[in-house]
Length: 222
Image (cartoon, rainbow, N blue to C red; front, side):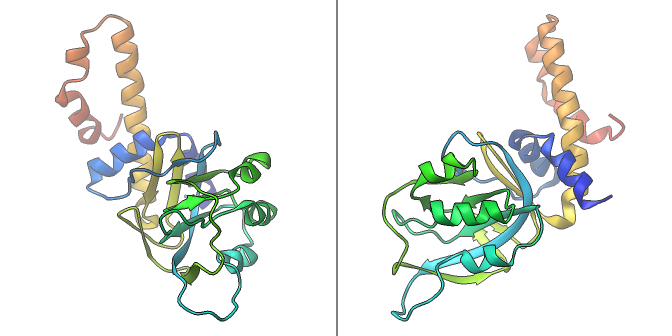
């Protein structure tokens, strides 16, 4: 199956369904506290990972994240920015414009953003822990890129899959994406049927019994 068709199928799901699929498979990936920082669209794409940390050297350096943006040459990327510091920005409107120019799909930040109106004004999706006005300059350094990072309690590797919407942000290991998407689609179909059953008057206690959810993973033909 092609990467594009997997992304398209993942985009038809939501984070609730993908989180449920990960639960069924015993996989970590759902995070807590990474929310849209403006009323932005859902993001679905492949991770470009960036590790930040406190700046300890006084010498001049490229601004954080900019070297990664400069190297992007496909339209499937989501910037996954780990290591944000409390109250200090690790995203802003100038790099949002640069990312949009390079067709980046959005940014998810284990930290906070400044200048959020700048990202909103160009329609660039940003998910994170909150908003600040304090600059990263001379406070935050980029420690690595393209390597595994620890993001909101989840290990995320380069090229893993990312889905973020109003309920939060979820990561799927690239090696497991096909089975997660397939199971997510079965869950979505079953839950749609359960909603219809409740609307038709069937007892909600019966519809939401554990056995109904167990049937999702037991019957792969659904």
